[in-house]
Length: 405
Ligand code: ASP
Ligand code: MG
Image 1 (cartoon, rainbow, N blue to C red):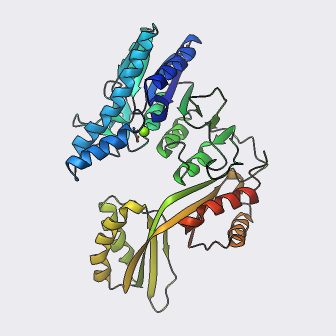
Image 2 (image 1 turned 135 degrees about the horizontal axis):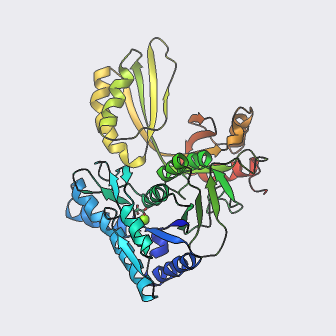
Image 3 (image 1 turned 120 degrees about the vertical axis):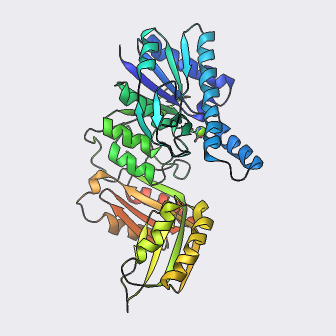
């Protein structure tokens, strides 16, 4: 009997009726003869609500208690889902992340899974149980509960699929799959039938919200096919896999965008060894993740340095930069929080000239100013004004003919 891991997102288990709907979907898979392991997110906005509540009580909650608190969201949804299955006459067991054998490191709120001991799950499956696992959590070496970062239930699901050697990891959510662009921005966006891990990873890290990027990474490492599909309608979804792409003709596979971009520019920076280290070491120590860094070629040994971070980190980063800028003798530093980014992604772009030029021309034709550019082998990203992102995504989608199937 094949093991199937399914994951249901928060919107799919938002209320009692939706939980019953999920239970019926699990029933269907179980009746096909699969051994079914299900990972659930917290119901609806539970995680956000718990964060708000905690902040009302203490604006600086201890990470340990915060994670223990947030882990309860998934305990609630997993136990209710097991109860729904019981009510339908099935034997099911709900397990916390710890009971499911998931170990993590100790970085509260962004813990990484360090190992999975699936023996308990296997025992339950062998008894004929459907196993429901609370997503987004595991146990640290100190026996504390840690959470995996927002959206982390996807990662739980793929990690379990890998350790159970599941046939497939099915991610059920409120969209029908992975699209060529966000359909809310581009009505002509098409659902992709399949996409490679690398492309999906670039999409996810470039702002496509459909899957947590760490889960895609894990899927790639363990070569677990991941199906992304709707939990509401019966449609085929998108399969993320490691095989060759079947849609090679159109070499740009998708357009991703992200409105959450801010930048800090430090001008008049003396160009000497150690300066970049002096700026970025304290940011790293404060766990501020820096994305794009651009340093101008220096004139007269003076240079400008610009880097991007997420918007919410700006106040902290500016506080950290103030003394550093002074110490290294920079002229001034300033921030801009009204930025966004747009990326074109596709393995077909590798070693093929012309994609960047076409992207820049398309943005130029929309009168959009490009502030920064970064690339990987299969991605080109432009940082632009936030209020231009929507136009940019639409224009690029058309220019690269992603509307044509
Ligand atoms: N409940 C957590 C969140 O909202 C984890 C998840 O949904 O995957 O981020
Ligand atoms: Mg959630």
